[in-house]
Length: 173
View 1 (cartoon, rainbow, N blue to C red):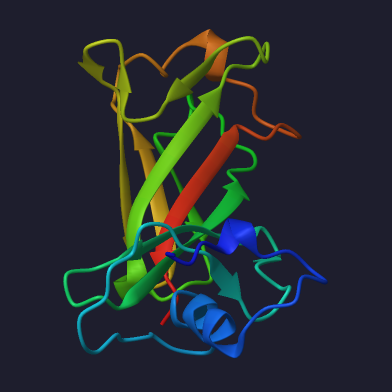
View 2: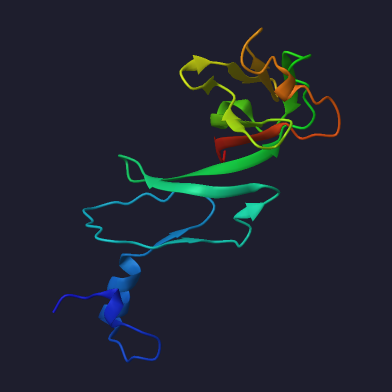
């Protein structure tokens, strides 16, 4: 009879061989990558993260995958507020991100209107290119296209207003 973890519950008497098969098909991550040797077949699996600090200061592990070499990679997500930005009067804003630039894999930016009724992607509105995102030396530079969609009275609130959010996907070095 094939072993299935769904047939084992707390308190059931189990054979040591059943326990060993269960543990052989369980991945437990410590502080580094886990590599598998020998032939393995995975029908389903469970990943246990060692510490409960998977979400800390706006960061969280979001993607866990297996690469061609069967090592486990975790991307983290950090969400930051943009803060004040009068987009009509100022073409760009620079924000310190506190991460190592080399490990950043993607940044997406949501912009909200002064009326807090419209939420758009900084990079494009409809089929039109509307802005850019650049990072280096510990900073992210967000810029709108001169004379473009965001150069309007709907985006000109200069003080006390969070313009939107940045989501940064990065590898944990």
